[in-house]
Picture 1 (cartoon, rainbow, N blue to C red):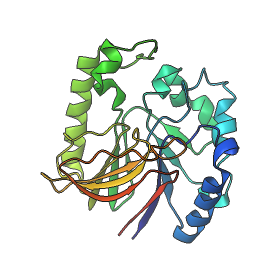
Picture 2 (cartoon, rainbow, N blue to C red):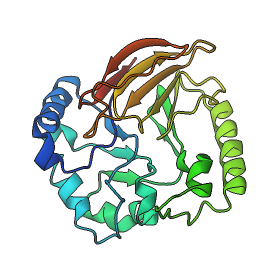
Picture 3 (tube, helix red, strand yellow):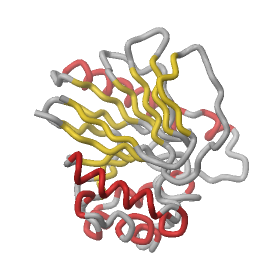
Picture 4 (tube, rainbow, N blue to C red):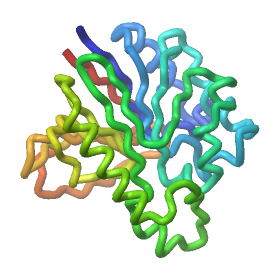
Length: 244
């Protein structure tokens, strides 16, 4: 049994105008790897999310872009901070699933891929600066306010689910980096940072993967820390993950 996954973040920002070669390459690699599904690490619709379920950006930046046959697989998505600047609930709506059945975006949820369990976590509410210092931004906190209660319940449910998991691989997916993830997690996958990166933790066996280079990138920007940097790329792209 093997599982093949694409990891992609910050992708839906006018791909048709900026980087058509990247999603064409995704289609080609998808054929070669025979991927099972795609994981999107958030900031699904720049700059301020969707305005509602009838926002044409959904089809223009998702359905009409990822048209390769190999990409006609489930897409599991978390929300990023830019998605909360619009109508966050729109991305959960079954209306979008009727437009494109690949688009699967819910509150924190679990995807069982037989040998692997993927735990999808909404990390934006954990970032207190968005609550206390939003600047000129408006965040759609429906369903997650008050944040203290939401975070406590989420962590409780997440810890219980991870303890119950019997999968060979346990993988957590969020938008922001979360160093506090534990309970036997093997990989933590995030977006937010506009690069492709693999870090080995200096104080735990967890491997951290950042896939946030779907469109905007940090060309020329890198800030080292105490962890071991295994890979870093500051250009556009995506990651693939194969589990055995």
